[in-house]
Length: 107
Image 1 (cartoon, helix red, strand yellow):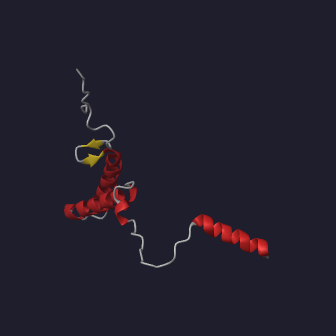
Image 2: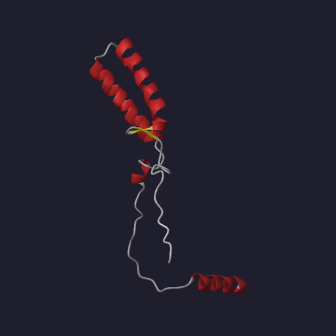
Image 3: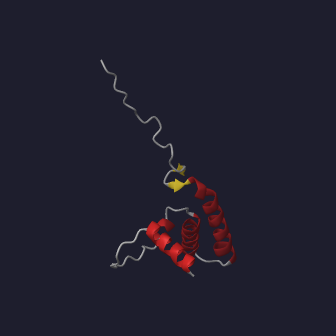
């Protein structure tokens, strides 16, 4: 009689980034600060409408999210290496080093 061990996930969010609903937890404080500063500047000092204030808050949040996210967002912008097809006879690295040593010894 063999016992098969089946493992089940006890805590599914282990290894995940902390979140508060759909928002990343590390962004909450920064986004709150951005919103408060934008309301003060755009609504109270510049007397813009709530639409303009909301747009400036959204712009600030998007900018902060873009700058501060680790590799989740900027990882999409890693350039693809340029691959070109070339034809050359194969030479092993070991063989190249032996040829260099021989040439330097002859001089």
